[in-house]
Image (cartoon, rainbow over all chains, first blue to last red; front, side, top):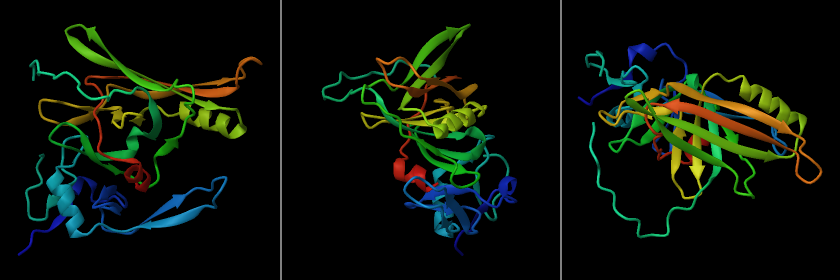
Amino acid sequence: MAAKYKIHPRHASKDTLISFVNGKAVNLTGKKATKVHPKTLTADQWDETIPGATQADLKVVYEGGMKDVDGYPIVVLDSAEVNQG
Amino acid sequence: MSEIVAIAKNTSCLGIGGVRLAYATEYTNITAVTVGTGGEITALTMATPAQWGKLSFDDEDNQAYYNEEGELVGNRVVSNGTGFMLFNGLTQAKIEAANQAKACCGLVIIWFHYSGIVRVQGIDVDPTDDSWSFSKRLPRIVPNVLSDTGENAERMEYNVTHQGLQFSPTTTLDEAAIEAL
């Protein structure tokens, strides 16, 4: 059975966690997010949809060892102990 | 980790000075960081999208910089970072931007050097275990709004200072990656 990855419970209630993975911005929570580009001198305001992260994206983040400022991993294995580190 | 690492003589033409571009965000917008095995920052996670401000300063006169100078404080060497960027001309939009920038209590600033290296001011990476933390004294922007005299150009300036326990790490993130966040 393939490993499943999820956001650490410390951050599980958040709607958006935006990271750049596999050449694109994704929302690590798995939900779509909206990025608002403000109006400029040459362009109107417009919205961009940031896709939710796939399991493949979360795997990259997990294996990269991304941590929050307290040293907790941002992504954990679904069945893993979620103690620090 | 204390050690004197051997450093080879530079045999290339690399070493051009100056910075050409910066991105800044409130430090609270950064939720998580990936640190590579060499201590460089390879990824960031932001609390919400579109939180990086692109600072395309004017540098025709090669005045912009991001310097860090070491200082012995007690028994510890700290890094005192100072950055400078200049925006030619004054408008109400620039004055509003200066007012908003000075209200930010703590920033993280990514500086793009002409040489190609990219440094992150406001995040310290501990060389003993590659853990990261926000700098002890986070970067703040202190703006100047100047008419100057008829011999010179009116302009706005951003001065940035911070103090860290380590020198600023590099990042592998490029402009496209930061703008995508």
